[in-house]
Image (cartoon, rainbow over all chains, first blue to last red; front, side):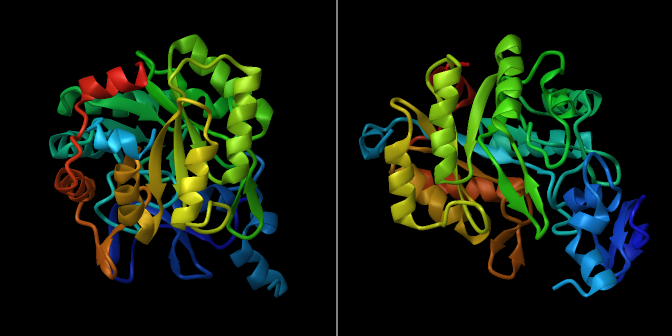
Length: 62
Length: 280
């Protein structure tokens, strides 16, 4: 399951792009491309296990 | 390689890491992401003195891609825009199966070189790029089958052991070409003594490329030039020109390190000299 906090946006704040890019609605910033594999649960990656932003937001995990 | 090579005027090979796969335009809008942008960046860094381009592929959203077709489009663009630069593909990846990571080796023609990560490294807080020995061996075997020169990426001292281990398991063509990587986290701490120790521990006759992340890019490149090594710069490894000022382009970073080499009296290798030095 894709992270519920993942969005794809062309513009946010002062940044804008020609193509929509992964955007984290928890940290309110565009996601590093490598981290987007975690957001999208690609391969063996899982946002609930591997993303500290999701874990901190959901579980209070330090 | 040693200070004697510097004194002897052995040409320094400049590799430009143009795009990477970790950060993208969200970190610096000058990072080339599309095939055409990467092709034009390759031409610019070649004009500036780079003879090798280290390439990753991305989807239109900027996310990384291992697809052979995407690498093919990039290579086609590089050859359309640049003159004679050596193409080096990344096979690095986190979480991706080995079969996907071999996709960059399957272009037509194959890349002249490809990176081969020597072992694990931590990513973020809950993830490790595994790079098991089985993965290293499988990627190396496909490189050997396709005539691709491996560039052994050494992220820390333990990876030097892994490089020696690979040489015990496989018969690599000489010279063994490595990249010594310095920076935060799992990487070797960026200190001059660690650099000297790493050079001393390399397999006999190995060449080394010098890679410092972030603010360490220029000082480590300078040390690499003086110690007879080769250097890698570019927006994959460092998005800043100086503190607080984003780099304007990959070519800007190449131009600076070429100026340093020339000021120190070390010639910069042409693509032809690079192929000769590395046995391509």
